[in-house]
Image (cartoon, rainbow, N blue to C red; front, side, top):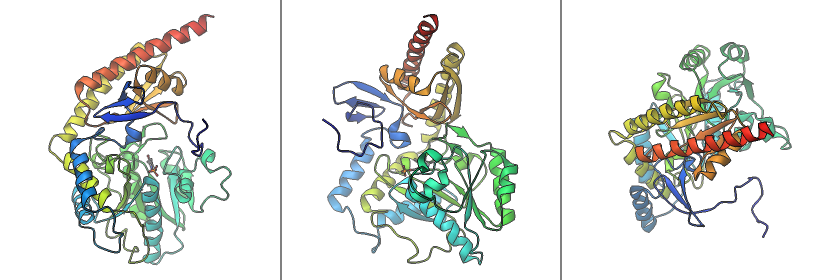
Length: 398
Ligand SMILES: *Cc1c(COP(=O)(O)O)cnc(C)c1O
């Protein structure tokens, strides 16, 4: 039967019924190792007992009240996010793209509030991904995604990723901010060099611009720190986050300093659902787990283990894997064959992964994955490489 869902996704013919930790069970009863995590969302794996408890307890109490009233769980989550980061203030949303919209509006409003209303343009980078709403899409700048949707939102100037001279040249009298992902996720797991991020910070300070780090994908322990900016020594002014914030419950947020957010006064922005009690209860529960001593050490330990084993695989199967890169448990395998072939071969081994730009396969295991399952993943990757290597050799011979 044809699907009544809008066909904007080329979906794999595979559905899941339940999950536990790093494992998913399909509707046909097969087990898959989840190295996608709903694209960096289920950072605590599936059915984490603490999250299940927080959600069900809140579900029995109160789901939604709107932002017309105080939401104590949201006040608490904002306090804790500010305590854990550079930020002084938080606006909750329902998705990454919305958090991004808030960041864009905030940067423009800041310049207006400090008497520079002519400054509305934002410098962005090739290979970026910031979401699918109209402004986030313009910031993304990917022609494939913009095509046919009319004139893109004005005010985004895209330059080459890592090209400081290009950034300097792009700064003009209308520039308001610079927007970058500390590690490009969709763009192919490309970490921005720390030196480059430092130089962007200096340029922003020098020119009165705001620095926005899109940590929608890199946030919440994915790179081995709670947020990726924390190991760069560079602090942004505004930081949209989302994906793992709710561990699978849809929630996003825009974090900012008091200075950067000073234009966002009562009535300037809003959201019906943003920060509702269900989302806030789960967000707090995610933080309970991630802020426990040793949580991030575990992420780093598994990352080191995986990276070592993947480097060996790359050496042995250089005809399949050309490079291993990334940070923490945001790992990219640059494929030497079309990346979709590697994703398919991994799925045949019962491991699910997701392709990214630059012919990269992203490995996004849950951060709670244990050593045993990480080594199981390495075996699956090795078997997929063997299978692909054989089929390519056969093709070459015939
Ligand atoms: C996924 C993502 C977004 C968009 O988030 P949605 O929740 O899909 O709107 C924005 N920025 C980055 C870096 C992302 O990875």
